[in-house]
Amino acid sequence: MAKIFCVANQKGGVGKTTTTVNLAAGLAKIGQRVLMVDLDPQGNATMGSGVDKRELKHTIYDVLLEEATVAEARMHSEKCGYDVLGANRELAGAEVELVAVERREARLKAALAVTGAEYDFILIDCPPSLSMLTLNGLCCANGVIVPMQCEYFALEGLTDLVNTIKQVHANLNKDLQIIGLLRVMFDPRITLQVQVSDQLKAHFSDKVFNTVIPRNVRLAEAPSYGLPGVIFDPLSKGAQAYVTFAAEMVERIKKM
Image (cartoon, rainbow, N blue to C red; front, side, top):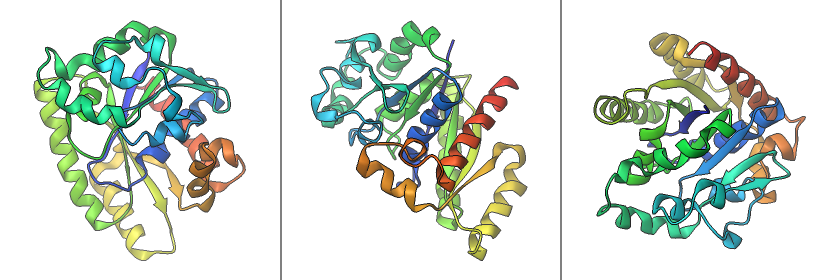
């Protein structure tokens, strides 16, 4: 069965979508079978995977409302090498519609259980809030990957996320754990970032991934071409870092 991971952080603008699509592309590049699930109504991970969210016949919205299966709603991104379960603005309505239904927090878990054997990794791009959508992701995941910038406000957001994960672990998903913290947009020339990075390693030790994603303009440019940086410019430092991170993820999973 696939290992399912949420890429989550309750702070916005920390590179969740960039991490999700580039990790998916990096894993595919080293031979892993990957499904990328876009749980954000903005649909950025969908567009960033070379899939036009405006032309989707079925989306994750239909899957959550049990009007389509994962097999019916997913698309294969030829350019990126992985499958995409896409999202668009319709997904914003799922928040309201799920409130009144049974098993509302476990809809995604049930849907993915049917196709889990077809993949090695399922990566879920979560919105930057603790919503019913994020809760669906956390309830079906084996663990959480937390991308974060090495800034002090990011540390405060991390505290909130850790508390959320503890609550979900205690009440809804006993398998849920933090797989690791990924330092993104890192610039070693900035003393503050180095200090916060050292604090993270001191406090969380082996929960901090060895790979560090540098601040890289090619990663920032890639979404405007509808591609992950790993595909857009494989030789850029950011792309190479994400491929290294993908290999580290595979090794870490072997130890779980």
